[in-house]
Length: 118
Image (cartoon, rainbow, N blue to C red; front, side):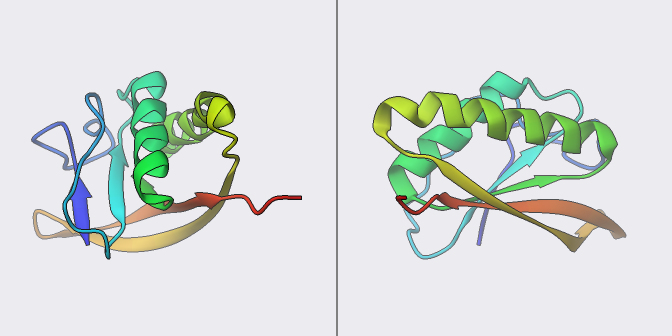
């Protein structure tokens, strides 16, 4: 699994995604887009849209209420970004225990997939 973190020090809810879309040469593992309370929801949405166009699957991770809020807003915005590509999104949230610098934290992860055609 490839983790994408555009801020170098993702260690709590105050750090996370705030830059360009992640890229990967590995096509068999999901992209993890890490979101913080300080992440710009439009930037995260752009990353989600880019990964969905390329890979048709992504994972978004957030730790803390503020980060989860930004992630949910980004998912909603990403849907609008993908309208022109006729891609709608389906998200499934789940909890994931993650180790951050030796401390176990509970993250909220969202699997993001294309919604099946109606």
